[in-house]
Length: 102
Image (cartoon, rainbow, N blue to C red):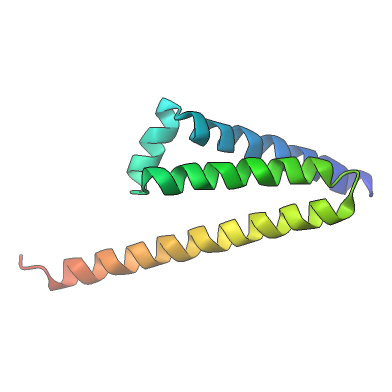
């Protein structure tokens, strides 16, 4: 593995590990963010668990490339789900506001 990929893997792993851990332990700031984006508690913890799993996979992937590839797939799937969920929520909110009496 080249140096750039190694550095990026470690930086991403540290970021995802920190973010996921804060979600799992219920950090006050993390809970405020959860409330701001209107995500349920169970989904928030599941996202945190996936982030921690992806971080571990990225670090293991330094030694076992297949694990790194699997971790990258988890991160991509998580990102795709979050983008889809956000777009759906925005669409529902705009439809609701258009149909509400003023």
